[in-house]
Image (spheres, rainbow, N blue to C red):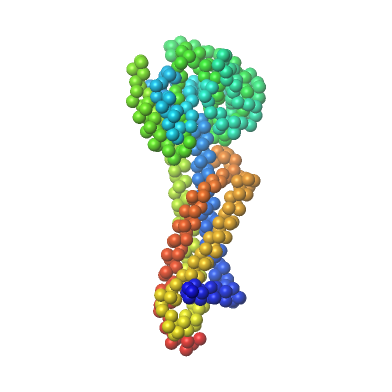
Length: 419
């Protein structure tokens, strides 16, 4: 039989009936651990969820990785490349790559009776992965594309629709300026709004409409096999840098027939300001985690000191009966572990409950103009929860050795004399 564990259990049972001052202090220690763990888990879940949602919105507009003409600049006027590339088959079969789709972009102006707005038309093909926009569709349907004729359907954001006072199924006139000639002639196209989306990422919602890539090919006098570039979607964002290097090794060092070269960009390189901002959120989480660990440690150390002082006569008696200092330390370590585990259990239970409520009912709302989201998102990540629990358990348990030093200094003769 484990004598230290047996005595620790007896101490715990006897303290449950103590209605004076010891039990409230112990309860406060358990509550401090539970609340600290609750805050840490919720903080990590919200911040990682927020980063994931914003990241997915940005990726939805341009994919994880892009392959474009090296001569392409930031004017949103695509320089053409051939869609018949020898590396496509190899990349499509590469593990981790979800989809490769063609695209082209061209700036334009949309004019109504009393409004005019500059936009970027993004042309897509039959290989377009519409899952992101289907999820964010608020009215209508996605673009219907076929192989025989060009589609006049366009997908427009709710932000643009409200700004230009446009409605679903309404026809809109877009004017495209041909920058390739000094005269810069204006080409007019009539489109029909088939769907309205809303991502709340207003920087993008204010700019992009989506339509058939063949309109851009016609406007630019491109051949049927010429496109603006390829967008690559991957299965796991954590593999972004690795797969960017893979794509670069396959496509980045190739030259086209006209002597131009392909350029490989990933989403972090295209939008560094957004991802730098998201990276700053990690520091906020670290500060919260450290502060909550400090609170848990201070309260647990205080609680254990109260336990030891309350049990001073018992410690003296056990020592007088021949119990060693190491055994006494083990007794109070068992008690400390019991309180820590109890606090962790309650903390996990309440954290999971809060996360479930927020995920299902969206109780905590956010200002879309500031945070690009309607509510605080929750990222259920078992690994994060386990890691927080393990680190909290280890840190608090390690600091428990400090108050237990008091046990070694208690002298049986004095405690028994004044008990």
